[in-house]
Length: 266
Ligand code: GLU
Image (cartoon, rainbow, N blue to C red; front, top):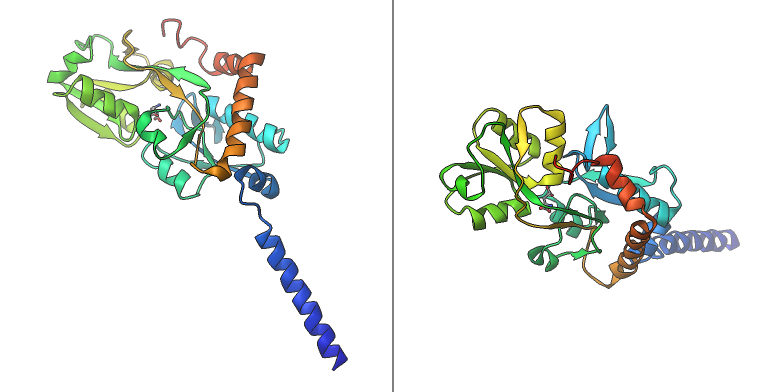
């Protein structure tokens, strides 16, 4: 009998301990990330030079920001404590708000519509929307797209801008930058409206295209988090990090590494 009671007690303690470790997982996201010793980050894989794959390796400006985050929060020197999840402009807010990712670092601009459903840190980069056209194109302004075909990436701020500034354009929405670029190369669209920072990646890799000089918006890239109290401590840490990276010149060094000529006439 004593043995049975002893076994029951052991079982009870084991169960309650296991239960404890589960229920002890903190609610606050910053503590949770530290508790799990892992951070799940939504990132692009088709947006050179921000998030892209080369020789099987994920790299870019946003990847460097992600590594800085993991280093600051987890002391992670190599980025091995990050789980990257690839997101698209259409999927990223759903991936964030469903809990699939902890944060998003994916060329994502702050805008008022998005700010109703997600939270943003202070910006870490400023891009501007521009048009990319083939050399020799007759497109010389966004208005001239009113009688032509304009390519945009679905779910981006560019999709919104084209509707405002060239309402009579035939808008061709593509799911990825590569698909839009293929359409441009095949002459199926006359221009792509997108962030100069991402178009720049195509200009570097492909001869025969140019980015027109006009910029139609300012795109403040920021890290997106879920709304709510449990994300506030993390947001505060991320803002401190961005501030420090700005002050220390680290952000500028990352910019020089990935987009040295962006605002120098590329
Ligand atoms: N920065 C723009 C946006 O947030 C476009 C870049 C992108 O995410 O593809 O919509």
